[in-house]
Image (cartoon, rainbow, N blue to C red):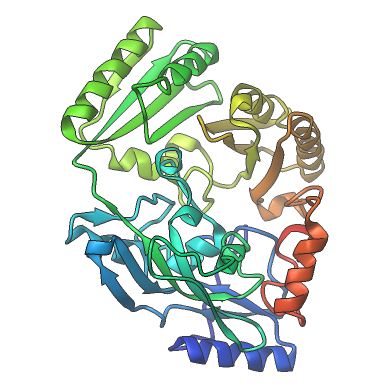
Length: 405
């Protein structure tokens, strides 16, 4: 995995950030934008001569309008700090990525990171109203606005979400926020088979049930689990929990309700993060894969992510029901880069046949070079055109994104 490095540049304002980028571009100095370092494993390795540039000094909450359900903060503000501010007014940002106390706003947006709450609340992209970004030529550009209804024009800031800092460095963002749910409940079901788990997950998404998180977890001989979370007013959550329990009972699934579900959801959010070690998911030195396909193909995606793992690998999978997303950890003992590459190629081919893809979230150094992205998307030339327009010297995270962008 890519090891964190200490940032050496730390601009203290958006203007200083832009000036630093312009100077680097003029000198041809590659840069690695850096938040808290919790997601630096994503994408290809940085250029050997790349200099980290930190947003840690951009740590102000610029404006908070509780009545309008909006907040504006600089990129270096951590999600933990944002949530603490919002909780004082009974509000929150419904994101639950790995390491929420440390992860920064800019880093989460650049990575497009989300967690199990995405079923009920969407991804960070859905909560961004506007953004201020420093481009490589020293321009500070703004897009979107500070109100929920904004029709000013094309939201170019959304191009930066998930682009891994290859198009610009996020300096500030304005977000929608939501009222804190009155009540939350988590139910864990142990199922006798994958078929039962899939049937139960389907039942739990039938109205009036509306889980905000619904995961399937299995692998390496472990029990098939279905984990559901409900948020809302207390009476509604109690009713949904009761209906969910009845659905599980009808399928013969053993149910457990959790009094404190925070450790479980933090562990589940960290399943694909190599720097967060959770014993329930085995050794952290694993080839970690994100597989996506249409939501209706969840059964096939789970099966392929397990069955196509190299013969010597212990495979564990985590499926996001209703989202079309599966994370897999392939732990090879001993490490075999050629076997991993063959298995990954086979997985990509099979997923492509059902409209899916597979990207590598992290690969241990012992496996050698691993193709992180697979075949470039049909939009690759358009993506390269945007990169050339906004970062013509390719100083920002050079080569780390799809197609070597």
